[in-house]
Figure: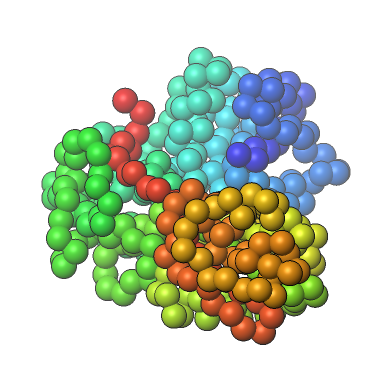
Length: 331
């Protein structure tokens, strides 16, 4: 997690440096450079979490122009310069601000000031459960509907094609796909249910030298269209090490925030499975298939989309094993 801290006084900066050391963050002292607006704009777009050591009002005004929605915003926590209180003010569940505030409080002997309704009442929080299960949210506006049902005493019905281990918490239960409140899926779904997308898909890529980012984007769009997979399910791109410096592939990965992992031809040849075979690819790369083999090797799971080819690009997809459980908070 990338963590940045900003303080406004010498005393606050000393506290920020202490927290930065404990939490592996980067502390700064607000001044002419970096200024508050400059630091906030850069940190909001690049960091996973922001900690303001100072007044809550300053932090609120600073982040206000940058707030988008709960599925994308970083965690934001305010700590007073005496280290008495840690107050999450943005992305309490999905961004992890509530957990960060508790962690800060543990480091300082402070009080975590948690105000989200489900936390205050100790009720099942579906967005916190999603985060702990490594799920992304396709339609975050539906979180309010599910949380409102729980807060009013109802039970959130959850559909999952994967077995969920453990015992369901109060106000959560397994449900049929039809009429469920929450659906776990790697496919693009319609309907009113809150869609939680496990980040378990790996995209395997092979491409000719000089393949453009545009060509890769078109190939990915075609794979999504024909397979029905949700783009949020992908967490990694894999290929052969010959492509580790391919500009178009690197640009494609960067634009989607996906790390690129590459493997040697020897490692790819050792992958077991029924793969599409190409004599041309064998002669150039030293292995008969790149996209399918790299997807399987990178995921440690099963191939679910075989090779799609076109415009000098091949793509395939595999799913990593996924074993959700009912944990949604620290016990």
